[in-house]
Length: 293
Image (cartoon, rainbow, N blue to C red):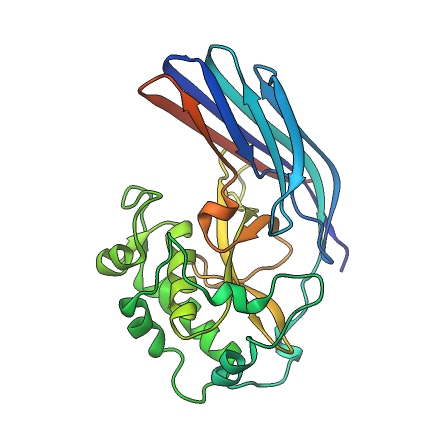
């Protein structure tokens, strides 16, 4: 199967209620280069032009664009344009069956070459502290002796079935326990929930940020600007490597998934975040288009 080439446009626009005197931002908007993903071209356009700008990798290997605006402005626009080729990821079905407890016991000693130590992705974070509620939810899928991949596929299916997609139900600060209580949220929440479930059992998992090609209704043209950033989960097991699960859509990542970056949680992989001086309120509009070339 040939790689699929996509043209991605990610356009973020902030409008401030009063002039902002200074602004410092971090943009994680450069897609990663991976064995199954090749970046052909990428540009990040910033308006007004920044007074300071440089790019550097973070501790996870994501490319981060650092920029600062040191003069007054009412509007900030950050626009990423890229061409990226995506192929097929390794087939996890080819790996041998492995009890999940074996994975838990092994990750402290397994160091994937050129990658994050898997054991680092077992640790709680500020956004994802250890959750007893997540531990209880996970146990229904990962019963004693169950195969790791089978258990994670079941957990993916249960989150998809038990939770309702509702963009108005949560914010970026909604906790996993709150999501478990109300049984609704968005892709970020479902990724956080699955990660919390796995870490509660001592299994490594990381947050993946990117894009998913969405299909228009039959007979309808593909529209510009209607897609959105997406989030899913990568989990590690010796022999499997990192396998990507999407609990929002109950499937494994495939050539429709374009990877921007990853980290321990949303804070490490969000597309854009920063600090401003001035202005009490702001309006943000995000437009994403993913077009097969």
